[in-house]
Image (cartoon, rainbow, N blue to C red; front, side, top):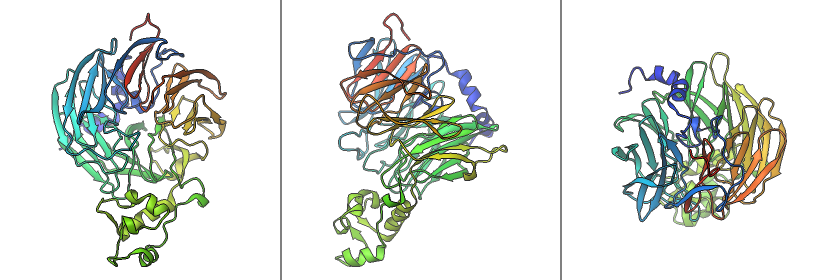
Length: 481
């Protein structure tokens, strides 16, 4: 049962959270509000490396989740020796305070070289942390490591694994589980892990973005990225309030907000121009030519070469080894409608959110995995290959476009803004620091000599960065967080 007071609590959620959070908190994926913006008192170093401005470094087990800091503790998740781990460290020293494990019912499939069964970042409230593993489900711990509850969920089915992070909304922890079939969104009570509501999302296929809370016009919307559509829900009940199209077919990014405006950016192959569309062809024609055993469906071996064969796991959503008419036509429709773009969506004066509220759309320099960041006047996009674009948030016109960063390669960590500077980490492990503003100005190039897929966290004068095997705290040695 949903507490009757919850809608009122959610309406004032932003104010309440701001009152409860300390300057030393980075409470969830991308920090306060999942915006990727550090508090105004943040002063992290501009130059750093394995032997420069290191307060401490420790070895950590493998995982792609980002560091979270709350109430004087730093939290991470990991996958090691067949167990799903949650770790707490002292943010001043890196000393491990505790670790707890969960046994996977079956280890989910992940990307063969970049993926991890520990990709979702921890979320916290004032006294608890919540973890999600696609190979297990959700669990909650007290800050001192006492397990409060666990809620097993079916193993996530995508070929890249689960990575959407949980979000706390009042007395609920909400988890997005978009996958190749049977997508859904579930809300559990933070107190005991009991299900409060669940929304099935059959039209959504695999997705990896994290929902956010958007407070505007005296209410709070749960903003959920998805296949083609962004949706706004009542976080207390899961009831859909609005839906706006214009997303990629696979959305890996998390939106950001500024007052009454919501910003999104997404990109996946096949959505840049009409000529780029992925075409599967009519199912009946494909069946006639390829259904060798005449059973009315296509085995993986029977799928035609090209787009269908390359995306057989995406097409075979229920993983039964065959692609039937419903699966084929569902994906064909998605391929035909996808749009890669960034956009700004403004809520109406009455609080309504509609497609007509899209103020501008921009279709160059788009990110695949790295979420956008907004500095109050400009929106920044990081494109794979190492390109940064700065867009005027009001007009949608680029201040600069696809300027080369200091490192090539993919960008899976989302940029972090702190003290007027962007910290942009490449997957090969080079962090470029760029001055925020309409003129591109690179400040430093920092090579960590190891892969980086977790997003940076900034608390006070300290920058926390996770690499493939280490966790670093960078800062002036005389300053401790």
